[in-house]
Image (cartoon, rainbow, N blue to C red; front, side):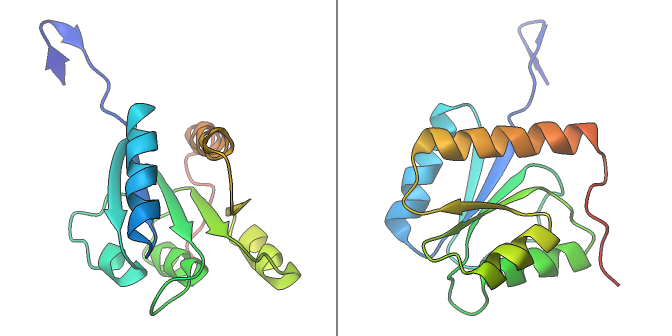
Length: 140
């Protein structure tokens, strides 16, 4: 991409999946201010049905969603070979949920959280994903 003779890096896209309209729009606004491209989805099915879903970027997904949980959405993406890094948002993180998230290579973020904590987690995941091209192997 070029802009008046200068090379412009495309923004990294953050995919936000949350059934709460206010949370989706708040994250879209705050992540956009930080220079990220943001796409929002109300549930996992909408994300999985997106024909234009990219394989790079970062997921920010709520655990409690209608239809399927956030970890189920991430598992479905992994089965499709999509290994983009993910942050799982939850207000009740049980030991089982933490173990499942860790096994899936997913960073956890407990609600309520401050914007800077989420930004730090996203930046760490993106830096890690660039240093390891395929850090998540699709499950058989």
